[in-house]
Image 1: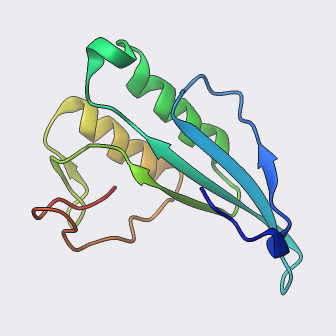
Image 2 (image 1 turned 135 degrees about the vertical axis):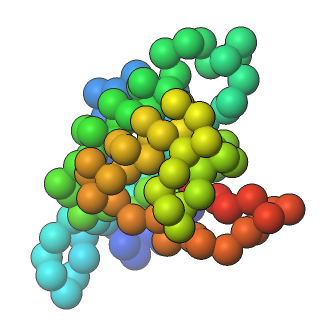
Image 3 (image 1 turned 120 degrees about the vertical axis):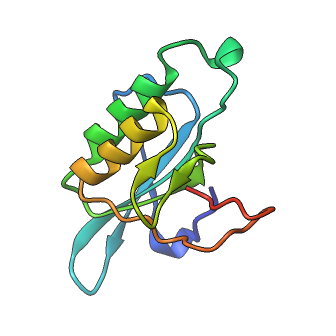
Length: 119
C-alpha cells in the first residue's frame, strides 16, 4: 500500500489473525473523520494458508464494520456473482454474507483479468 505522506497516514493493526493484510488510517479534512484503508490478499491454497484462513478473513471484516472504510485487494472468490450476491460455493457465500452483514459494497463490477472481477 502506498499513501502520500501529506495524508498523514497512521498504521493500524487489527486484532484479527488474518495474515495477508495491511491497514492505515487517514483523516478526511472535509468531515474530520478517520478513513480506514486496507489491502488484503486471500490465497485460495489451503495447504499454504491453513483451514481457518477464510474464517480469519471474516473476522477481519467483522472487526472493521461500522467504520468509514475502503478495502482493496484480491480475495480469490472467482465464483461470486456480485450482481446477485451469490457465491458458487459455501465458502464464497459465507464471504458474501459477511460483506452484506457489514453493509459493505462491491464497487468493481467489470472483469479486470480474463473476465474475473476483483473482490
